[in-house]
Image 1 (tube, rainbow, N blue to C red):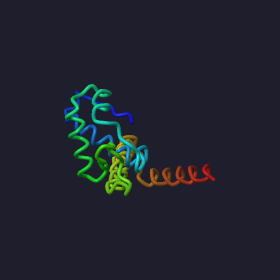
Image 2 (image 1 turned 90 degrees about the horizontal axis):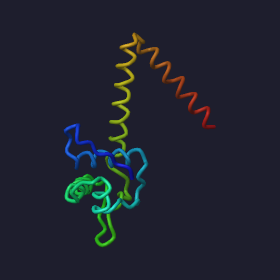
Image 3 (image 1 turned 135 degrees about the vertical axis):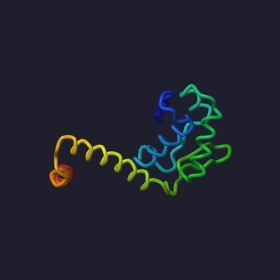
Image 4 (image 1 turned 60 degrees about the vertical axis):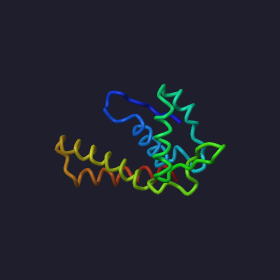
Length: 129
């Protein structure tokens, strides 16, 4: 599990961990049932206080993304994330906003963007068959 911490963006470190784990679960890069690194191991990897990781894990547990198994560790929830779809849509919304802003900046009409997206979608699906 790769998590990157930035001390420059003003977001608390524990929230950076929470947000990145949410993204990894929503993107399917952390599978249901997969074991999370121990608090100590992740703290050492990120060179941060273990209490910060513990706080992030607690937030993730409250959100239903992970479950603690006493004596065994912390695991991605088997039931699937209740936030998975919401997080995927949030990510896509951000990317759509960026695409639309770029299109507007380049004087490309919405109809042209939609046509482009439909064409790319068809192309993607035809390449997968």
